[in-house]
Image (cartoon, rainbow, N blue to C red; front, side):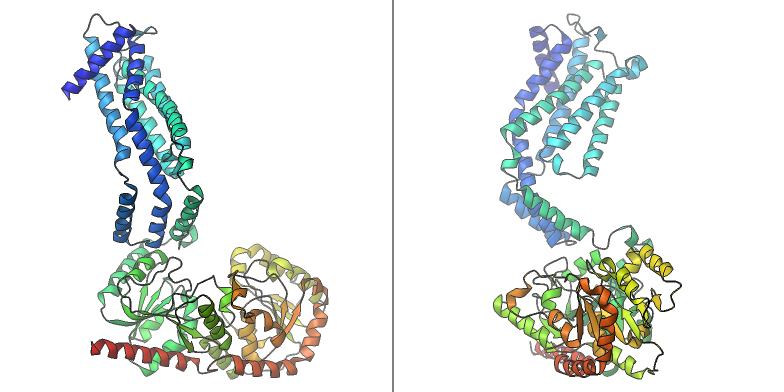
Length: 633
């Protein structure tokens, strides 16, 4: 290093001989060093462009293999080799800057010992050090800090790599650079500070020169970069938000359950539930398995308060595990069971992937509605399942048509039915049905955009408040959660009208069973209500929710559209003021609708009132076949 420092002193003295002013000589030296190192800066610029060019792929890798650190590292390494990217290149300018800085310090020290060199610059002695002299030259570190701040501003705006960093990283680096400059400026001589200031200012000029010479916009696909950021953000925000912040106990519990899950080998059957509310879709099947088999049911839930934990205390066959949505990504990648049953769509097309460990797992999709899967779910949402339990003939026809048109591998389609409907029908039949003084009309909006609450609820209630009907508004739970002020406003508005009730307690389904008629929009509750009670539904024609823009491609009209005139009637938004009349007419036709709905349910729904047995029987047989196949090997 002494040899290098001597070289710096020689160059500095040469600059001084060319410009006999040591301050200007330092600036000239700084400029020369930047010119000499220009090839390195160009190389770093190109390397930075490579990184930003790769960033979309890096983001997609992180999103696609989220949680699998080993696979992410392997894929990143392959990408670096493909682009011949050196991840350590960005550290080279910093290392060189430190070496040059140390050389300047030594050169100025050497100049101090040379009586032929005048250390005066603009009336200031360049050898003075603020920490030794005091606050009289505090401007020296302040100027160093300002120059660093200006350089960070320029880099955050125009440096090809830093401009793509998060604001936190940008401001963090700025705080570090300014703080370091202030500290450095306090403990080194003014001459060194002049070098530091000149270096930062020349670096800004060099930055814009390099961007002009090698424009990143010619090489980087910024649209794809933004797309990859959004996909990664979606993954990182899963289970996030202040309202969903987990306690230390829940995080610890998750770690324990994660280890417990993988400590068990030869798992046959796994259910996954997003929250406690999804158990009702599995309930019939699970209860049948508990009553007729000794199969251990491994039940994963992302809800720490899931009712399954209480149920597991009654049934040792159930092994419950709490795994948060982010950790679930890794768990599913390493899944090692014979069969996984879920109500979650978008397997493989979003954050939840099929197992990397076992390729023979049978993934079973259970719908949580009796309507069109083609209309109400995203394109390709069940394409990567092996088996689908179909509620009725329309779902089967849609899946078969989708497979044929898109040339997809054929899935196992099980004529299942709908366990939740069976449960509701049994509860309804076991109830005592007492004739009421006034017919009950239940208004049950969906949570989709432009629903009844958003579009016409006030107008609808105003039109019905003078009728003899008992009107009950049972808003979607999300309305109560996200629009509490509106719900309270409606309660206050109709508090003096005993015929109108805004119901926000969802602990019981008795209201659904007792109602003589339902008014809804596109909510799936219409089918559950009509198929359970055989009573008609009035559908308000709010804008239809379309999750799959390609739904017309298969040439089958979704049941959501044509069933409305089978189990009730459609009321257009511009006819809301006629709602009382439509209700009266529909109620008068109730016997006709009862006959139509009864016939439709028997024709459309598979295994009516015995879907639990049908679903469980398939699972039992499939697991037995897998066991035989494994034993034969």
